[in-house]
Image (cartoon, rainbow, N blue to C red; front, side):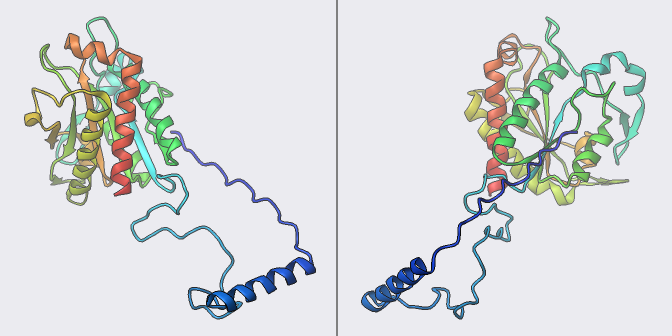
Length: 293
């Protein structure tokens, strides 16, 4: 888990003005008020001497950052790198069933890979690191569900809990698909309306769709990739009810399938570092657009 908390820089101390300088300044203000017709009292109608000292602007009811602040200041984004490079060595542990609300499903999977052996777990970590850097530059507090710093997992139910515990404004789970050759393009997976056991996605279906629409649009713009030609009907969006990471989430969350690791043309993109940077830029732009409203 990674957090980004930087203390604000100390303000420089101001030297007190001399009595003569204050008197000259006061005289200039009175002269301007008399000659220009400007009101001599505070512009907002507050009685003289009662206006508070200048300070940072209070955020609006919508939670926007103060004027001049980084665009995502005060926002928390959780990045969930799909799978884990260590999963291959822990098949017994990741095959253990866990509760996903509506039923039980394996804790995690190894993920897919290209024919040459470039794994989805390696891909998702790379894109997630790039995405973390971009979101931090926008002022967001960023949490990773893991950083290949544990033997395997986390399990899908724990991944959901980590986003919930962070009270994330948005959660993005980064993936790549393992479909048949000829199936190309990206898609964003949205939570279906699910209610059963510990799962109740009703509060997050709408916000998650908004997040997904923004991510899909900006991903296409940044990468030049087309929406998947094999799922989502060309929209780049797919709704699923069988993913524990979505079913158990209480905060807006989507999965991004960046491309198909079994298609040679998509593989040429997924294995290119410059394209992976574009993928991260597209996801970051989608998150920013969603959170800025």
